[in-house]
Length: 291
Image 1 (cartoon, rainbow, N blue to C red):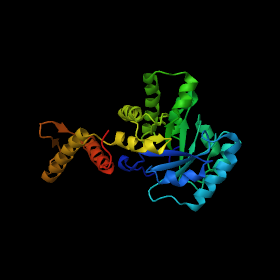
Image 2: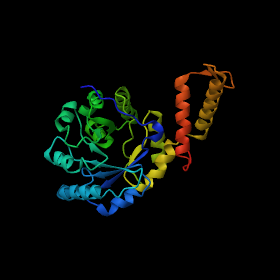
Image 3: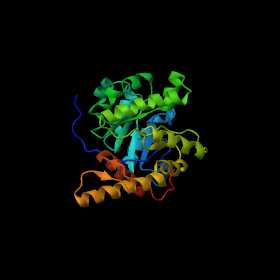
Image 4: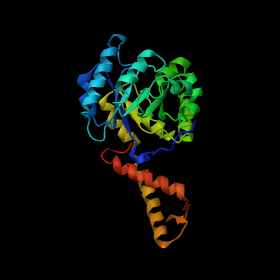
């Protein structure tokens, strides 16, 4: 199947922070929305014990019907495994109410075909959490029902018994490439499980950013400012980008096609476009010290 034309948000408007909140803790929903996260994900899957999953689904549906969210904060729902009955019931109950749904354990485009339509046409994000999901990453990312892909790194590392960071980077890059080839937004980073290790979170975000990942899911509100700091361009990057933008604007005013920098180097259009994105992103995240 061919993906229909869609409007892609520029990187300067993409979510930077995604916050999970357990679906069986409805008293936390408003706090999550007020946390500063760009996206709040009501979790019906891993964060909820089996005996409480039906109640979590009802909580999510009730909350989404009231739509008390703040302007600019998207409300997503991570459902249970869509290959099973519970996951499909989740989609039927909350799909049309959410801004998007997150589908765990996606391993093939065939699964996406099977659940197409259950979420009422809202955007769907496929979570790749297994070896089969990574192998099928390109066909999953190219599926017309997929708005984005992300990694479930803890499940993936456990299945493969991977402990080496370089090996994980290889897996991450495969998903980054699959998303880019399909015209999807950059892949957000998986959760960092140690909520007290802010230095480790910052370093991890910097490393992921260097791989082409953008933004990160969080499991606690205290992680949100750290993630935003990490994905804000550094002062050096911003200054360099501003210099390129200024040179490009000068060339446009002079009617010159080539853009020359003060040091004599020339840059082409893709570099100028990237510089403009960097400046805009720095302005958007200006309230947070650069990472």
